[in-house]
Length: 258
Image (cartoon, rainbow, N blue to C red; front, side, top):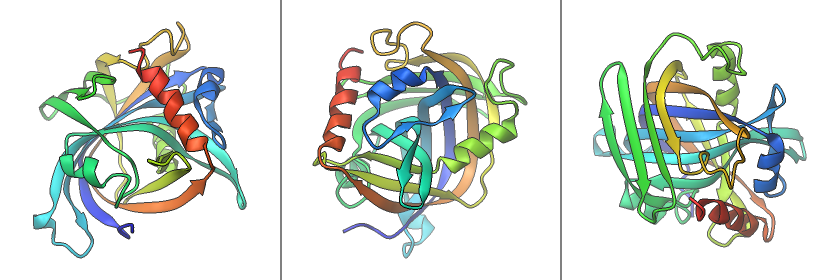
């Protein structure tokens, strides 16, 4: 049984984005997903999101809870009955919350792994470090607010990047059985992003040259969101016997090399 809607506030969300050789991503992605391309590149990255006042719609905000979370994401498209759909494939989710780990993949879509988060934040500067408890995933991001994307970004403006990632609000990840992909949709009522200038970024996944050969995954840009009212909704699952297990195996093999 799934909750119909979860409300909350995005206290802080960082999207760290890489431009990636689409052939490399195609080897990772399970059917029916394929890389969504921008200027001939695939797009993948990490979402570092702190939530507050998270609760079912019938519960007052004061009774909501907060957590730090991370998700590895790949922009994808796939064929559906009504045409080509776009979203993100999320092979891994990590959380500081034991509750999220307990209900994820059971009551609420998305299996979550436990992780430790260390954060240092001011009005302009941010430093976020995530280390999964199983030791297979680590992320470190240091940056500051800025006014424009990097000159070498494949997106020609902040607006174009914002529109691209806003359209990728529907995410799919393997369920515990490996026989379906669970859908989870983010609906933000006041979507706003600003560029984040990155002084340091480390990723145990994207820095691994066995998984991503030299030059196949390059940092492109980072975006920052703050104080965004939002809702989480369960999306229609994609049933594909064995495909979820394929995805889990592919990602486990990648992460085990880090």
